[in-house]
Length: 124
Image 1 (cartoon, one colour):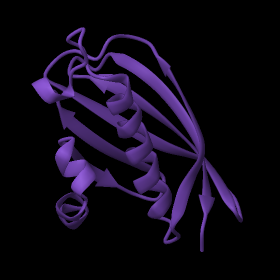
Image 2: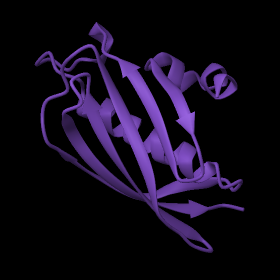
Image 3: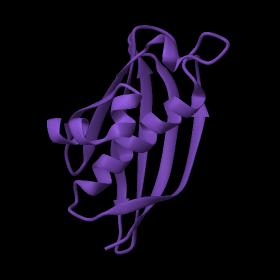
Image 4: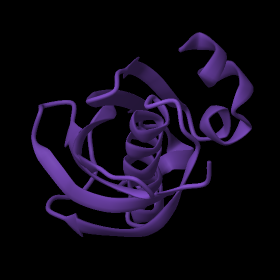
């Protein structure tokens, strides 16, 4: 996992740390800093989306196949506030050419702040 964290410039820039990866579930964490915030002082929705896409992406790649996001949606439940956010992904279905995953994003009080789902297309 350290190699994934060290080599991905996007993750480093956004302080997203891959904590756990498996073929069924994965977890990423992000410390909330001033650069994470939107003008209203809460975590930018695009960054929350990126966390969800990242955690689902590393989960689907743990199958040994490369994949890209085909479609994704997010429902924001609460504002992103606190010291950090955690995103946890779970496989719904792995098919021949596509896969479906879901992710929940939590604040540091373990309160659900967003629900996300996505379809990934296998490119190999």
